[in-house]
Image (tube, rainbow, N blue to C red; front, side, top):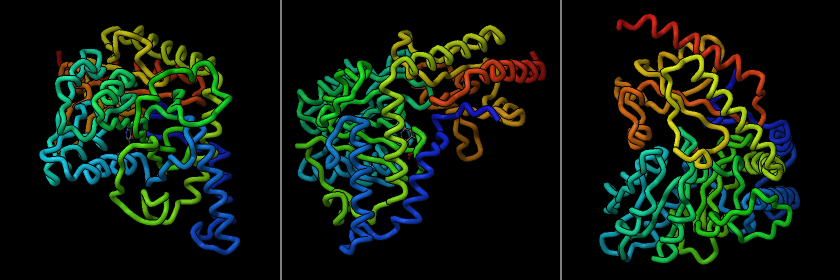
Length: 401
Ligand code: PLP
């Protein structure tokens, strides 16, 4: 099988699996219990927290463990609503290119809690238009929530520019880093990580107030995510309890946390060698070029500036084809990829993310996402390109002209 769907999920690493098995076998006691076995579990959780904090250069106590990326996003957004109950007619600002975790919640928060949702536009390449934020934000804005990198296209958004505006206006800035953290260097700047390599020196992280990320996108387990909260950020828990310094209740998922910690240590090592990312990016580019060579009418859905795309993702439109049909055919031949389209109430809808990017509906219907991981064997990419071309040819032949 050739697996090119790493933005959906990644295979847990061997170290992650070993850490989880150890947690299930030896550290299954409740970390809140005062006896030795409970305290051993608690110690393991805190060591794990430190490893995860190091991945984003934060202090361990700033991390709140959550059920997954979606849960982390809900904790941040619902927390903002609870925190700002005193604001009359509040609004939150987000975008149409967000993952459903944000888009759906933004709508729900609006409908159920009386919070207005304002939508930031995107520029033709799919990047959020930072210039438009100044006009949308006002004294009733309680939160700006945007993604760092897009799950369907890998487009990187202008987080530093957006964050600067929020800081200037005193508005909390939440970033969905689910497709970023573990794949790209992240530095929120509150930690004391000394080992950060040159690629880690950027100033995006310092403008973020809350950051969501999820272990299963970087070879960790499913069902565990983190909300990082910058000290001084106003935050009220929407699921109160005694754990996580009162910021989120519930007995800790010890195997999940230890699995995420192992994956974070490996991701940290990977990110400290920028050459690896550059090589993988070159493999992605070669795959893309090969597909375009073999299918000359295919179009890559990407931003104008190559620096504005995460190294692992490509999204390719095959005119006149339906992505779902192509994906089924590829799956039969052993290639896993995906499309942003969702099957809703029996009809296949084109990806709202691609439409928001300005991609015509016909092309959005035929767009497929291929996503690599740091362990992708470059050797399989030529085979994958050939397979895509063969399937496109077969399907195109069956469409009446
Ligand atoms: N945000 C983005 C950008 C994502 O790609 C995903 C998952 O694909 C999520 C949020 C949700 O993360 P999780 O699957 O951990 O709930």
